[in-house]
Image 1 (cartoon, rainbow, N blue to C red):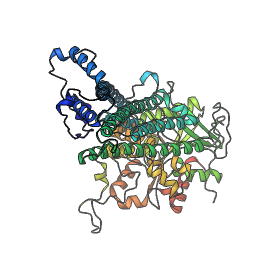
Image 2: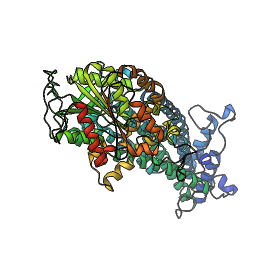
Image 3: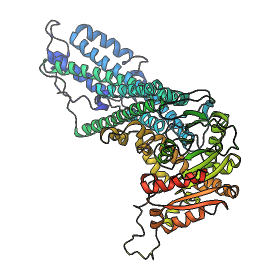
Length: 637
């Protein structure tokens, strides 16, 4: 612990040394004519005394609550009465000593507070990490249905800010900018919380724990602001007293020299760059929250909450609502339906067409990959159909950890039958990864499912960790121009992203750089960012993909395998992409294996186009024809 604030912090430069003659030392001078040199000598003496260590001082020299022993106090008072200049010097010395004493107490207390804050923030960070990504602990009975990577990054930023306050608190190297930065961080955090609370969708889903996280982070910044304020106060007092000393010594012609060494400038630069980095991060974080709040407000305002048995007519769909997935009200999914879906009377009538239930792919929603079915509805080729977003996609809530295909299928069943009162019957359609969810849902609801259609769907082996090697062409492939390690032809929906990459992308998603460029550069709309082509850059979506990836080769793979036995008598149609079959013989074998799931497979159609068959006119038309034949409509043309 430093004993002199001037010496320890190197903030006061050495002052010129002078001397007094014997007559001056004996006090042979007039009180009205005080030489300024004497004040400088006295001041220098006090400065040098301040540099002496306060430890190992004989007990006789110590005085509890005072700077001097009893004898020194008597002598000092006598000299001060005879010498006003010396009294001024002693007064400066007392101020410096008291400031040094207060500073030592302040540093001790601030270190204790900051270490406690860092410890609590670290514990909260670990709890949030485990709760959001591995095991839902349902803290205090509340869950965050708007979970992403935001809370995790906020707590980490608070830890960094408190650590900077702990490490960079050297007196003499502080400025008012440090106080402003912490106050700005606090205000930005509260503004982010305000944005989430003014939008109904996010206000209902953010949860008490997430609100507490924002408030706790803001409180951490407030602590830093208060500590910065006191450091700045000590800093100003130091400069004030040092300026008085410099003016006395130079007869008022010079001010205290405040030049810094190269090491001090490096210290200032590191601290300033680190705090500026935090400020820039929070600025982008706030812009991302602002854009997301705007997008969700625009896309969710068409969803009308109503009693499930009542039809809700909107501009886009016949029925659109959010529904719980279980009795515990864990989370809600967003369901959109077209046509008279509640007309479940006279189910034996051949004219009463089944409801087409569409399951989207792994990197899209029905907003993109379900357009070919919506087109059939508008052409009056199918009477009614429904689609939904899996948890973490689109407007569906973020799921608790862990999640698996079977859990999602159970939640969909509860939402349709118990919440929305949509009884079916259904013809299930699964595209891409959604084919796995369709198989499990169909197996669990054989009594209400009339048929199943898989559109270039995943095989369960794709859930295994090393599946990409199985899709690549063999080394002895007959085509010499084909690179066996080339994966560029793989669609995004199939190109697997490992957990670390998803995690890294999720952390970057808090800045929202790709989402900001989507409207600034590409001029995409809100629906594109929530449902469409910019969905993969949403933090909630990346968290959902991370959860899917963790359980894919364990829980989800087992769910799909266990469902195969119950699909043996389900009427099934298979659609495969010609381009995918040509590029990977293994993909063709997998599609062939899908045709053998049921002994009532109606047809296997290899359509023209790539994996996204809905983007190719001929492939889309061929796929639509397969669906029409499955639901029982005869070709009119």
